Image (cartoon, rainbow over all chains, first blue to last red; front, top):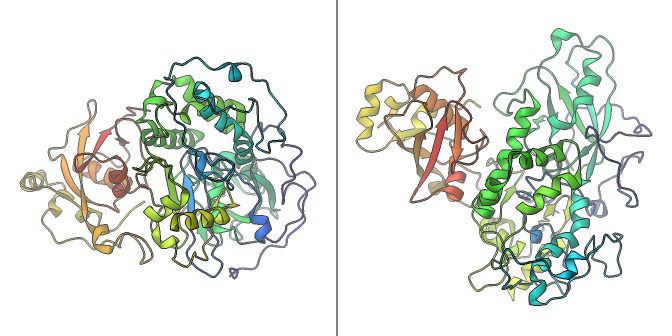
Length: 411
Length: 142
């Protein structure tokens, strides 16, 4: 546990209805209790709490590894909720089949193949299903060649629960004004549930307004955020920032708000929402350059690009995924994307992140696993002893999964 | 994102070095000077040995639209050089004002973040041993 160098501000229990951060946000998903959700008292972050599902920016799947004994922290952050194998909470989701072994998806159907009836007639079903896979809106798939196209699509919508959990992940946060800021009266802390998949400057208008109310106009400059002395990069997804800097600490996440002394060397400026949109779209484009040689993103119309952004900005899952699904598909004759967009963040190094070319399929035809990726690009993260390192994506503890993958590899 | 010693971190290739010096641009005059002392690309815990990290990569700069063309197009750049550092360098070389905007594109499709390292971009988007970057005073590819 990190020692605090400055005393924590006196904490009050969160107000009865902590507001969701996204403007025009949709209703909080019911039925699934989230630890640390609105109204809950701050709780210690033990191992169990790490299993909580969080969200990530569509550009990234953040995660952080909490070392059991002070080892390096690794955050796996695939771009654009890429290949489901990297979002797996454990075997049985995503590309891993029910028995935990990766499945290939051979299929002769061409891209323009008509959808098999099983998909065309699929109806919306309730999320919970006996199969335990969260069938989403399509019927369970049969593994025949003719249903191959639906197999790929079905896999993604089988994961719709995961996609929704990722999208709606929230981090309870307490914003406190920096003590040296000059105010006309006392500034109360402001509590907010931050969406993991979004960006700080996109979702903190209310925070800005709250503190500006007690400040003089001439004291107000560009807002910036800091955690325990570290300026927080607004262009990193919120979930990534939390996993990287604060995943080991008790909730709520305590962020300090500044309006003076902008740290030019550490932070990019963010003078308007347009800047965030440009950054977000650039991430999407970069990811598609890796996945599809930019073909899918370039074939889309400007309004589709806009819909991605509006979906993020307004916290509209369906609106976003109506377009993003196309960025997550690949032709049936391929077994995956060209390269998997990923970024690995480590709290302990100077380098911003690790990003390299990595194919989803090995030369022998088998699907690569998360363990393969880590061994290839970040071997120091996987020690021969099996490691005390833990890997997170969306603050889900997948170390059990990766441990298992690693042992499979060893065989 | 100011960086120290950035002028010396970008050096032109081969005979273009003399040509670059003629322009008088401060940055180009650094051609042929000693290797810059930049912080290593990563801490001892990272994957690349220090030698690799300091190896330069080749960058080919192409102008878009009516943006002035650089007389020297091919440069050897440190892997840890950021896009912002490259932007500052090009602006100095072209004698643009600091307030003027300059956009950089990879693959003629996306504009990387200013803090992105060229080494990473080269790893992922380089071809034929170089990273081709298009630069423009206006937004070219959105």
